[in-house]
Length: 174
Ligand code: PNS
Image (cartoon, protein in one colour):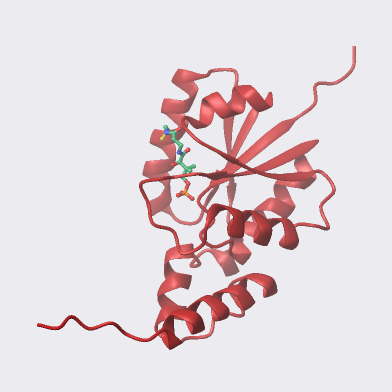
């Protein structure tokens, strides 16, 4: 009997990809036969980067990992996991504050699709304070994010913020 292939999904918003995400991708891709980095196509949220931009950035930053695929999904994660034949969902935990939401998500997902197990990887200490939200705040306020995100993401962030900063402001007549 041949051993079972481990197909893992690493889902998220990745707006944008951080060094913490990238570290997790490296570690999860070493455990799995195939790792799918899956970006939620969330039509309710207004992201900084479009879905295509995020996919391109992640593809570039993960090009050295041969077993990593980058994709997007709509709807329920467990349905997507079923379509991709994934037996594992990978999530990262940075601090105890992440635990509650992650636990809830893992339990709901297990109830809906017991054949896909959620596994957690602890974020490396040096990345445990990084989040996409904080990165966006720092860059918007003129800070340097070079040590928190991959090089190609830092470039895109600078370009995005420069574009918005140089765009002429529109004032209403009143
Ligand atoms: O990077 P994020 O924002 O923490 O990722 C959250 C994500 C995309 C993993 C989660 O919101 C998700 O899986 N959404 C898909 C909808 C779904 O399956 N909901 C039920 C489980 S909470």
